[in-house]
Amino acid sequence: MIAVLLASLAFGVDLEEARAAAAERAAEVEIARAQADAARARAQALSGQALPELVGFADVTVGSGYTAIGFERPVPWQAGVGVRGTWRLVDPSVWAAASAARRTARGQESMLAWSRVQARQQVTEAYAQVQGQAAIAERLTANAQDAERAWKAIEELVKAGLRPPADAARARADALDLAALAVSARGEARASCATLQGLMAVEVTGDCEVDPVDWASQRPGEGPEVHPALQALIEAESAAKAQAHGAAWTHLPGITASGTAAQYAVPERTGPGWSATVSLDVPLTVVTSGRGEIAAAQADRVRAQAEVDQQARDLAVAGVQSRVRLQAATEGLAARRAGLQASEQAWERVDARFDQGLESLTTWLAARRARIDAEVALARAETELSAALAAVEAARGGL
View 1 (cartoon, rainbow, N blue to C red):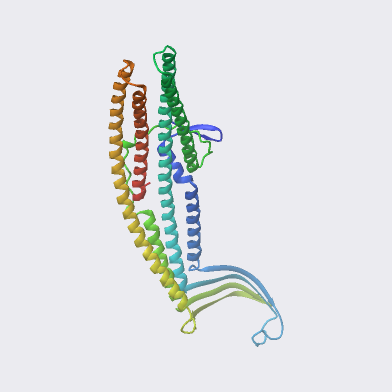
View 2: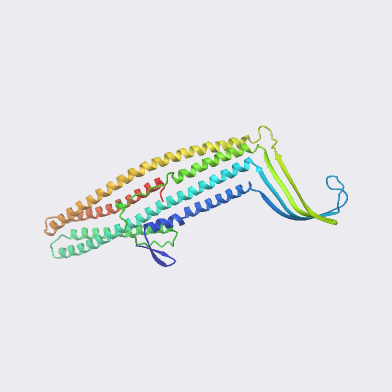
């Protein structure tokens, strides 16, 4: 089990729990979530501009003589309590801006999904690195201990005059080398553990014990019909189209309806009153006004379409490459297993002959190192397979 320290308390976590934690709490996911929330808020704000606006009011007006527009004031004071309403019945530019904002919000939602896909891929690779380096460190440590015992035994033979002194020196050097390699592997395992904990957004201690995963039995998950990264750009293209429409529609007429309903009071009498107005606003601009904005919006639309096409090609390339690498990693793992079996058989034969005095120490050390190298290569091949599996899932956009 992975024992991850969080607030000084250890708890176990398996691969799927690590993936789930990273998909929710990784820094990139948090940023993408905040951007999606902001985009939704902007879309709501722009959509709200097309809704009626109601304002309650209470006012008192006093004066004498003439009004500001030249009429004699009919009463010295007036008071009213009521509501005013305004509604942009037709506002093409606001509609286009709201449509662009909604598409942008959907694009940010897709980017959030893509950030989760990437976090899942990264945490899978980090988990596999911890497992692989820990396995390498375990095997190297066990072999270093065996090598130390062999060195001590050869020293006794040297003292008895049954082996040359050089044999003891070579055996000691081999044991020390294996011990150094084991220390290095443990360091790599702790570094990978720190990466894993960082992706999971827990306390980073570098101390993990992983529950081994049989990567050869894993199968990459399926993704959605449209990859999140591609969907994000499709929405961006739609937003660019809406913005281009908005730049052009700025010059179209708009229709606004407004009204007031209130209870009024003037000297010696009170009563209800209402008014309604419908106005047509026609922008009066010179011919060249707004052409720059329209041209810029059209250029953004063309760029967005090019980015969609490029992303589609990139995902197609990533899909083929990841499948090819997965096949190669699968075949490589099988080859490493066969290689380990062969090196173990060779080592057993050389070890038996060495005990009978039929092989030199150099040959014995070389055979043992070949077996150890095969064990390390197998662990690394399993890690490579895990990375290949994660890459296939990411290319599919799976979670």
